[in-house]
Image 1 (cartoon, one colour):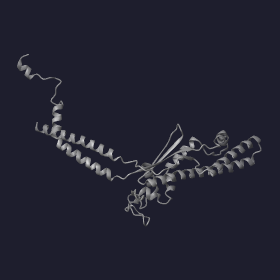
Image 2 (cartoon, rainbow, N blue to C red):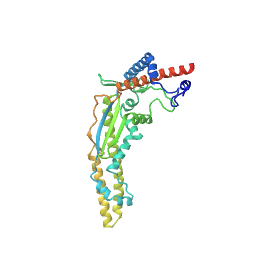
Image 3 (tube, one colour):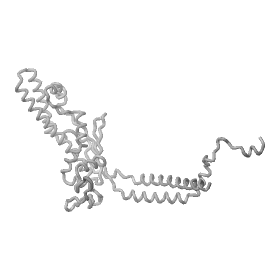
Image 4 (cartoon, helix red, strand yellow):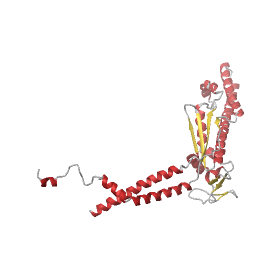
Length: 314
């Protein structure tokens, strides 16, 4: 191969579009002032933004479902009850899921809204003073002194927030509930800008869930007892009477359990508490991630400017 051919020879694996790492670092080094400027601006903005975010506090409770003493009796005669058309209140694992669904339901939130300051604390809370331990409301939404809603109606929403709006905030931003299937333990957490309200509201949720579930079981038991007593008076078969009496006994035990225990469905192993430390936001994490993102964006902008400008020249 002669010298002229060597000069014209090009490596088939080499392309003008291949990235030259040396050139890449050189471009970044030359644009370091712009990179530092953009990164610094984004870092400062992230600090300001993180400081503007309110602190949120989480109060939690660990509970266990009560094992009804009459559960075995009810399950033993469940076939007979179903044949007789009697609705036996469920117990055990099923009742745990029922209580959890009650806690997450719209009707339950509607019930909670009947308690004082619950709706304003959910829908109009603005800030919390750690020194005075006072929760402040947004005056554009709710006037605390007059207890009057002041927000402007929009779309289908009225001046006063509906229970549907409160349910969305409650379910998406406040409540966290889960069941450990291995241990049967239920974990409930309420998050709010006021640690005191978080604790008080969680206690209210647990208390009212127990109360409503107790009322449901008492109502079902009362209807079942009424039916069973009617059937007992109309049958003459000894075996049927014996079975009905056992069902009546089981229903009476259900009513007794509901009347005796305040913590009817869920027993607190760890009661709600007033949290001392915030659960979010993590301001340091926000600043670190924003600064990293700013650094990457600034480097990309320097590279894009360089290569786009070079292409235009070529």
